[in-house]
Amino acid sequence: MTGRTRQAPPRAAAMVEALRGLGYSPSTAIADIIDNSISAHASTVNIHLHWAGQSSWLAITDDGVGMSDMELERALQLGAKDARETRADNDLGRFGMGLKTASFSQARRLTVSSRKHGHPQTCLRWDLNLLQNEEGAEWSLHEGPADESEAILKSVKPSKNGTVVLWEELDRLVVDGFTENDFHELAEGIEAHLAMTFHRLIADQSVCLIINGREVKTWDPFMTGHPGKAYEGTLLRMGHGTGVTVQMHILPHKDMLKSEREMIGAAGPAGWAAQQGFYIYRNRRLIALGGWLRLKDERGRQLTRDEPHRLARIMLDIPNTADAAWKVDILKSTATPPVTLRPHLAKIALEARARARSVFAHRGRLVAASGSTKEGLPAIWESIRKQDGTIYRIPRSHPLVESVLRSAGTHRREVEALLKLVEGTVPVQRIWLDTTERDEPPRSSLLDERDAEILEVMRELFAAFVEDRGMPEEEAIARLGRTPPFDEKPELVTLLLND
Image (cartoon, rainbow, N blue to C red):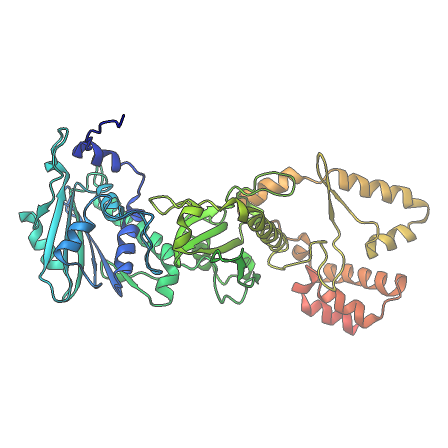
């Protein structure tokens, strides 16, 4: 027996109020509207934020191809497009909901005015205060702007083709206690978010974004072209036919930056520690700052954001055909890598973290994983991982340690005991707390000594190489000059050479 069916249309007011709670912030909502402008081939998008207390408004104007009356009606219909439909390669949309859900999340009145070449100006609006709240009620889409909106639309509309999205009755923004200063701070936060989200599209001049007359400058999380940058990997393709690419970037240590201002700018909107990890792009538009994507290390431990790895940032591009595989959400703010790619991404993440940790620990010098600088002296400390934690030792094979032990004679046991005492009392927790609180690794105490005392240490090391190891003097001098912290004192290396 074939079952009978019933129509169960949603209650308009209740449905829309539920959609308002999807989780958009003002910045992500505006970014969603800009996506539509870019998909409409806009070259310039103007964001206007006007403070007028409870009558404040926000408008987004573009010079794209615009829409005819029928196209605008379809664009304002909830669920007008199926997320499974094939999209153009440059299309930043997916669910056909962004214009409405992003707007409703911030405002109770949405007015859209558009002009397409060869078509008259058209204008439609949603007014949530006018939606009926009974079962089966019509979804009332109103023609033309509200009376008080006409002057606003005239002041911001494009001169030729294009679209204006106007938000009024900003009940989710202008709440009790919200002031004009808060409104200006909101504009600054929006600008910072857009500078990060669309930085690649702005940089290659695909689009120009303007907020209240000020052009949005890019914030490049990868510091492309910076002379102090520690590492920039090659572009890798992930899997066969996935269209996914990945590129590793290790940012400069703060010692390689020119000023405090440059350091603060490089940190990003959320700060150094929070901005590390994968940056996931869809058609060059940032959709997710994913951290470490819940990937795990070789021991099965989940990778976390922490200070030693804050310089690692990885650019990951996916095509818009991969939305389902990557579980891109309706807000375009989260993405989850497919199971088949996770092992490959974990390998890249671990390499990036190892490189970043090395740069962080050695104040900008990318050293080998063994802990020694290429062609320099071995590190005076080595770390040894054990099941119950990491311990730190002074290698007895270090040239100076080896020389001291050899010449200690009857005092060798006391020297060995001293070394073991130093190894057993390394203030690891104190060093970690100081590093975290001060946002930088501890510096070498040798650099606080007088040059004469540093030079004396260098002479002892030089003697250990030449006299005990039989190394040629030129090679010994060269290795000292490449060893931290002596590489920061080239004038002392020259003095040693002239001794």
